[in-house]
Length: 162
Image (tube, rainbow, N blue to C red; front, side):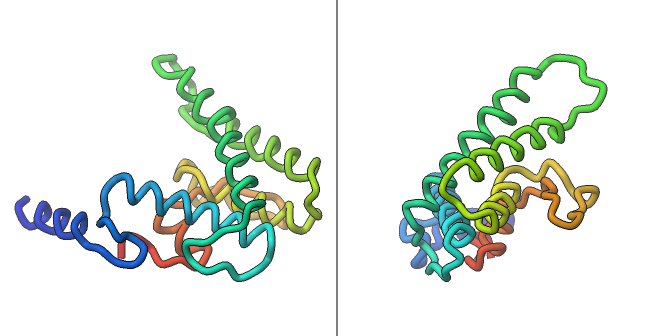
């Protein structure tokens, strides 16, 4: 156990350009949210955006995605805690969240191509609830949700947990 604790302490203390204050919980959360903002900015604009940067519109789209995930998935699932369920799954809630996010995107000032890319980023921004059974079929969006490191890798950032 001592070697694992030592590696964890070394990781927490490690500092670099992305984590100038070390890998504390607050810094990990900050970098994760910056990475999501950047991913939505890239999806929305189609532009190459450097690590640690984002666009105002990308941040707005990301904030709406987080709001929808919170309302349609997290709050609804938490409401069911302690209740007997036939299947303990998020798939129905995720489908509702994806539909609401797509509706929000398409009702705004986005082109349909930008909306499809941003919707794809939305479904990659949450939890690891779904796995290989969530296959992509043509333009249908499947709920495959990466970890923070995978989210960072999917938009070109380096993982914070190298």
